Amino acid sequence: MRLIFFLATCTLAAELPIPDDVVLSRNVPFASITHDKLGMDIVHPKAPGNHPGVVLIHGGGFSGGNRESYLPLAIRLAQNGYVAATVSYRLTPHYQFPLPLHDVKSAVRFLRANAGKYNLDSAHMGAIGVSAGATWAQFLAVSRNVPALEGKGPHLDQSSSVDCAVSFYGRSDLRRSYEGSRNAAEAVPPLVGGDRQNALDAHLRASPLNWINPDSAPILAIHGTRDQNVPYEQSLFLIERLKSVGVDAELETIAEGGHGFKGADEERAIARTLDFLNRKLKPATLETRRLMVTDHGPGAEILAVSWPSGRVLWRRPNHRGTEVSVLPNGHVLYIEDPKSLVTELDAKQKVVWQYKAPPGSNLVSAQRLADGNTLLVDDVAAKVFEVTPAGTIGWSVEKPEFKGQAMRRARRTAAGTTLVPVQIPGLILEIDSTGKVLRRLEFPKRMPAHALPLPDGGMMIGLAGPGEVRHVDAAGKTVKTFGGLNPAARMAWTSAFAPTPEGGLIVADYMGFRIVEFDAAGKIIHQVKNLPWAMTTLALLP
Image (cartoon, rainbow, N blue to C red; front, side, top):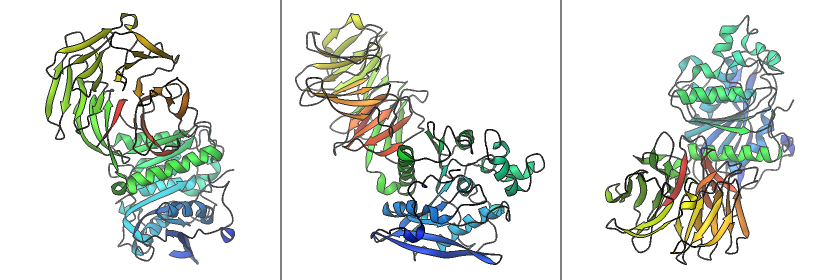
């Protein structure tokens, strides 16, 4: 049985090379138990200052495993600015619930009590658990301020609460943990004092799912769909219950993944973990950008969002409009009502300009041009047109052959032509001022929604199936792709994107309900998943 996801790369603790930029303290005792002591291994950055803390809790079917297996991950966390502690806890069959939970809570309290010694920012603490350890990580998140689960260990003057937790394929509901599992009948009864028939109440008490409350901390669950030890549904139960009480919860599904990851799946899981911890434990240092996004779904609004924390700064209704853009002066231009209204807001969200479209319109695109006119698309009339600041139509081209074919976001090029995506046939059209088609790029069944013209005559195009942003040159040749067949990305439909000043790209995955940031090499550096928004456009705020 593969118990830990880091098994493929870990070495014996005695042989593990320690990088020069971290400090390792081994075998640090944190709690006494009968005839023994519990210990932890702590790795912290050499860099000055205080750093958020993360407790790492090993797996092993509640009866085995060891903390040393997680030193490679602890070192990686320390190199990313965390104080990481791999901890031991009491195991079955000699000890039952809630004693293992008491132990991991003691570990958190010990770290806070010794924050100065290990350069720990005690106000920001998280937990990572794998398999059996994930159950205890979940408990740390859902039992904040629950005295009944605190235990009698040392440092009771310190808090055992965590600000977030990452659960790698952990059991959340022991009562329902037997179905589909090849080892639950062996692992669970010793923990709770009997099987489900004879110890049902104990199963319920030892299930993190049943302790979830509005004060619970956010949890990221990472789980493979082919897990034969802990069925994937255990993470679904957890995430759904957290969301039902208003707690932030995220799910990373590893398609075809089993009980433990390796290769690209392992690296994807670790990268996802780091991104989640960064957003939850380092939000102030990470909020380096602001985005505008549209929610074309039931929320029907535009939102200003800090990135990459995902924190909402302000929002306004848009009646399920599909466009928002940011003007050079920091104003926001958006479709407030697809049937009738385009609105410009100033930096204080005050309306400074509006255009009211004729009855029967369906506005799907709005771009402010350099001359002050606004370029619009009416999908019902299959029309691309400009309106002046006074609201009069200054230029108009109709393409009746594309009625009902989903014309989308038009953009003016440096040469004065206009790029118009047509989703259903999978086309990007470049038209001149008379409406003549100068260039026609075909992407059958790829549903292009946005083509961003580049100064050199090339463009960037958002596609679906798989989700991809493709950079093509003036001749239509592919230069670079973001996403696509990249297994770490796995996007569904890149409906919106915005280049970053560093040469990267921030992408909205319309059907995947997430925002992903790529660096210039196409590597994911940040992402926020499980967002409640159906995002059709995205733009960077100054």
